Length: 315
Ligand code: ZN
Image 1 (cartoon, rainbow, N blue to C red):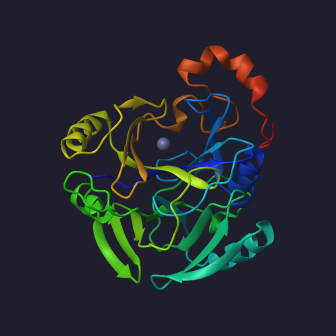
Image 2 (cartoon, rainbow, N blue to C red; image 1 turned 60 degrees about the vertical axis):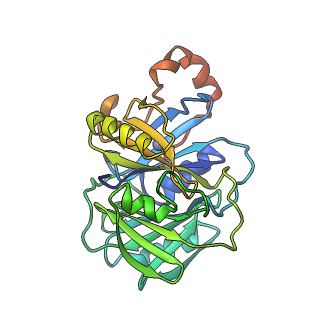
């Protein structure tokens, strides 16, 4: 079974605006500045807790000038972070002041505070009583008692009518293939759980088909312990009719990519070696780190990638 969410990766616009929101407003730590493997002139930014633990990681490809995407079916509708009990009033006020679009909603009987990131991606915050493991970043703009802890949930809006092997829906794949348990249903929303993470599946036939560009999620990654588990999954997924990538070296983890029946791109990522592979905890995310395959282009890439100002970090 999968251990829960490893990271979520979104497509974004301006890199500095991206840092200003995820670090300056949400108070996450920028734990890695690296580049997109396929286009190294584009950053790949990782945000997370103080040590970049799997499960806390939100990552972005900030392309700069890029068309806005469209939220809809075949995509992720929102990402929900967990915050400590008693912190939502603080967040509601902070987000009202700091971002253009924010608000509140009740979902499954719980208060959820939401905001759009600078590219329109919906971020939600929800109080959770039993927190998952996380390490505080002491230089965060957000006081410790309100700090975001980890990604609790992703909400998917699947496309219907495309089966993979015996799995006719996202729900069937979540429970039949990935050992998620359905824990609730409310209106058009079903909630599934695996480990400490949840996936909501929203039925939204009136929504348009999503267009993947700025402000939308590129993929959702789930945790696998190690490469041995990956190899078993690779066989199982292919036997069950999923079209997968091979196991790919991503420097901070190894990955397998595939689409689920609802059209959303999933990834399996290993916990190891993790974000502290090439930087100490003290200086995590402060300097550009290049994948081995692009290391020889360091001087060129440093000259084309805009220098980032990181709130809370003296540079
Ligand atoms: Zn990924």
